[in-house]
Length: 213
Image (cartoon, rainbow, N blue to C red):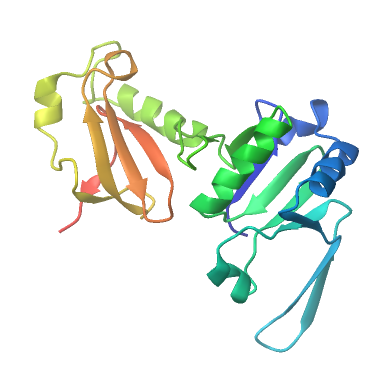
């Protein structure tokens, strides 16, 4: 199914119909942006030779993606659905374009799990799913007592450091880019840039990360 990122005005992208970017607004934007091309229909041929078609009244292609992507026919498709615009598996360049579009539409860029992306295509908030798992681990017997701040000693006792390669409990692999014992109101922070381009923050006291190698 892949990973979708959404341009939405709602806090929860699944509730976009309550605060919609209307189809008329989206089509007006597409018509005014020379990098966007309205298509309404896209076709693809499977490895077995079957031809598949997809139709949507708000489907548009971004013509400003990298030349290599255009040559390979892998240009990002922006699909208007129920008050929001979705892009499947966007790279950093596409995320940056999405942010520019969101600014024009008074909206924001939100991933499937609720994470927010900024103008640089960087993830600027931990997904709600990760936050819930971190909260549960923090309450697990033998873990940090609730309300007890992380310390520099805890940061120093980590099995990895900035620059190390790590793997999370769901087998996603990335590189540690920051460790801050005083962040998140004393819970501490470990920031990891994963190989798929996402940058996520984990609680220092309940990160679930393992060092590779």
